[in-house]
Length: 91
Image (cartoon, rainbow, N blue to C red; front, side, top):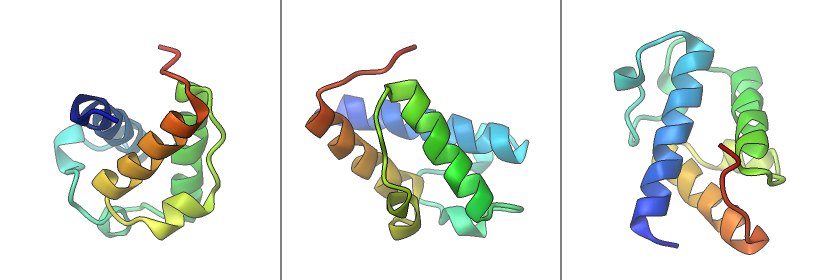
Protein backbone atom coordinates (compact mmCIF):
# COMPACT_ATOMS: atom_id res chain seq x y z
CA UNK A 1 0.00 0.00 0.00
CA UNK A 2 1.54 3.28 -1.04
CA UNK A 3 1.92 6.17 1.39
CA UNK A 4 -0.14 8.32 -0.98
CA UNK A 5 -3.02 5.87 -0.72
CA UNK A 6 -2.86 5.86 3.11
CA UNK A 7 -2.72 9.66 3.13
CA UNK A 8 -5.82 9.80 0.91
CA UNK A 9 -7.64 7.50 3.31
CA UNK A 10 -6.56 9.66 6.26
CA UNK A 11 -8.02 12.73 4.55
CA UNK A 12 -11.26 10.89 3.81
CA UNK A 13 -11.57 9.78 7.45
CA UNK A 14 -10.79 13.31 8.67
CA UNK A 15 -13.51 14.71 6.40
CA UNK A 16 -16.11 12.15 7.54
CA UNK A 17 -15.32 12.76 11.23
CA UNK A 18 -15.43 16.54 10.83
CA UNK A 19 -18.77 16.36 8.99
CA UNK A 20 -20.30 14.04 11.60
CA UNK A 21 -19.17 16.22 14.49
CA UNK A 22 -19.90 19.46 12.61
CA UNK A 23 -16.42 20.79 13.26
CA UNK A 24 -13.68 22.09 10.99
CA UNK A 25 -11.49 19.48 9.35
CA UNK A 26 -8.45 21.28 10.82
CA UNK A 27 -9.69 20.17 14.27
CA UNK A 28 -9.29 16.51 13.25
CA UNK A 29 -5.56 15.89 13.16
CA UNK A 30 -4.30 12.47 12.03
CA UNK A 31 -2.62 11.91 15.42
CA UNK A 32 -5.42 13.12 17.67
CA UNK A 33 -7.21 10.46 19.69
CA UNK A 34 -10.67 10.39 18.13
CA UNK A 35 -12.26 9.79 21.52
CA UNK A 36 -10.85 13.12 22.71
CA UNK A 37 -12.86 15.05 20.12
CA UNK A 38 -15.98 16.83 21.40
CA UNK A 39 -19.11 14.68 21.14
CA UNK A 40 -17.26 11.74 19.47
CA UNK A 41 -18.80 8.56 20.85
CA UNK A 42 -19.37 4.96 19.80
CA UNK A 43 -22.32 5.94 17.59
CA UNK A 44 -20.11 8.36 15.66
CA UNK A 45 -17.41 5.70 15.41
CA UNK A 46 -19.86 3.28 13.82
CA UNK A 47 -21.13 6.00 11.48
CA UNK A 48 -17.55 6.57 10.31
CA UNK A 49 -17.24 2.84 9.62
CA UNK A 50 -20.47 2.92 7.60
CA UNK A 51 -19.27 5.94 5.57
CA UNK A 52 -15.93 4.22 4.88
CA UNK A 53 -17.67 1.00 3.83
CA UNK A 54 -19.87 2.89 1.39
CA UNK A 55 -17.06 5.09 0.07
CA UNK A 56 -14.62 2.24 -0.60
CA UNK A 57 -17.19 -0.53 -1.21
CA UNK A 58 -15.67 -2.74 1.47
CA UNK A 59 -16.82 -4.45 4.63
CA UNK A 60 -15.09 -3.28 7.80
CA UNK A 61 -15.36 -5.09 11.09
CA UNK A 62 -16.76 -2.63 13.63
CA UNK A 63 -14.05 -3.62 16.10
CA UNK A 64 -11.41 -1.89 13.95
CA UNK A 65 -12.62 1.56 14.91
CA UNK A 66 -12.59 0.57 18.58
CA UNK A 67 -9.13 -1.03 18.39
CA UNK A 68 -7.58 2.09 16.87
CA UNK A 69 -7.49 5.50 18.46
CA UNK A 70 -6.21 7.95 15.87
CA UNK A 71 -7.14 8.77 12.29
CA UNK A 72 -3.69 7.54 11.24
CA UNK A 73 -4.17 4.13 12.90
CA UNK A 74 -7.72 3.77 11.61
CA UNK A 75 -6.68 4.73 8.06
CA UNK A 76 -3.84 2.19 8.13
CA UNK A 77 -6.31 -0.52 9.16
CA UNK A 78 -8.70 0.55 6.38
CA UNK A 79 -5.83 0.52 3.87
CA UNK A 80 -5.17 -3.11 4.81
CA UNK A 81 -8.85 -4.01 4.38
CA UNK A 82 -8.86 -2.32 0.96
CA UNK A 83 -5.66 -4.09 -0.08
CA UNK A 84 -7.07 -7.44 1.04
CA UNK A 85 -10.32 -6.76 -0.86
CA UNK A 86 -8.57 -5.39 -3.94
CA UNK A 87 -10.99 -2.46 -4.25
CA UNK A 88 -10.69 1.30 -4.67
CA UNK A 89 -12.80 4.32 -3.84
CA UNK A 90 -16.19 4.69 -5.47
CA UNK A 91 -16.01 8.47 -5.60
